[in-house]
Image 1 (cartoon, protein in one colour):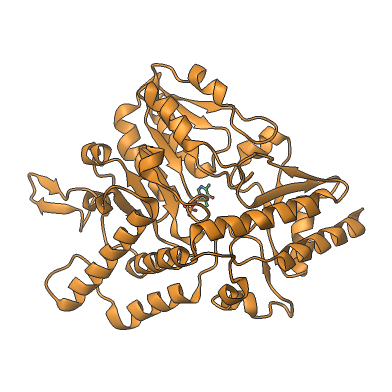
Image 2: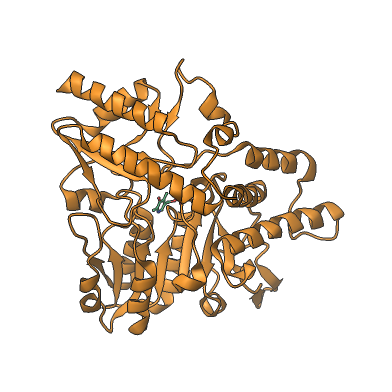
Length: 408
Ligand SMILES: *Cc1c(COP(=O)(O)O)cnc(C)c1O
């Protein structure tokens, strides 16, 4: 499809946006916390639950075979979305957090030893920090950090000096959930690969907003969550390069992931099966496939163009408010606006906005080291999606002016 988005039409797919909330029009500016699900996704899951449900990968019943087909079709849709070479390289997880823990435990643990180093960017979500800290503590390794500048851009010149012959992995977010920065993943991956260091990317905030091409980025692992990309909670994915997935041991054991079990010896399914122990989130997985269809139906060019237009519009309007400061001024930026107001706590801002029917996040955004870097305890964050409008931004700006009146 070409041309601008028909946002009015799209909004009809989201009953939460068109149903009055506390008597007001709901202004949802919190898609970085969790996106809303369009009707086709909800309906697809409902149809599965009511008419198609049984377990997958279990036996010869037609019902089970069809459920398995739908489940595996979703894997192919996700493969296509991120341009992975093969659907087998898409491992289902509960979300980004579980995917990154899988990498830390199954890929990281065997190769990280005492004195080794794990290199992470200064703008990681806790999901790409804490699993590495747990591993570093266990192994006696240490975490090193790629710094960022005052605009919220990583200092690329610092990277070569931070990679040593002890560096075992580099972890990087594609898009910062706290600042909106879009990191040059391809360039950083090339820098790391030149020194033989594998790269794990947190794609939770990238997949919903830009066209991700994993073969072009060339990273070793890439993690993302269904609920940030117009899909349900409880499902996400880990992409891995085939040679890694082949070599990695299982990290959870149980049914579904084995070829044969005896008291003497158990053999495992080839990947992705060996990483998917137990009954998966089947309805959610099929729902995620429907969300891929939905996003592709709109088109990522149009999503990105619409969101960028709103980002520019909102940035100009908010910056005109005296005493308001936006954190994160990267040249490449997704539609996330984190701001602080002189003398007013973000929680007070969030409460007043909530009263006006405007949903934003006030807090540290699971990125406390980013808050520390900028010397603030928290920010107020508005995050935009393809269903947002200039009217939503106008409502935000009006409410922020009201906050200033009350506290100013
Ligand atoms: C939301 C988010 C996560 C965590 O995703 P879960 O779905 O909670 O596992 C990780 N990284 C970033 C950048 C996020 O925005």
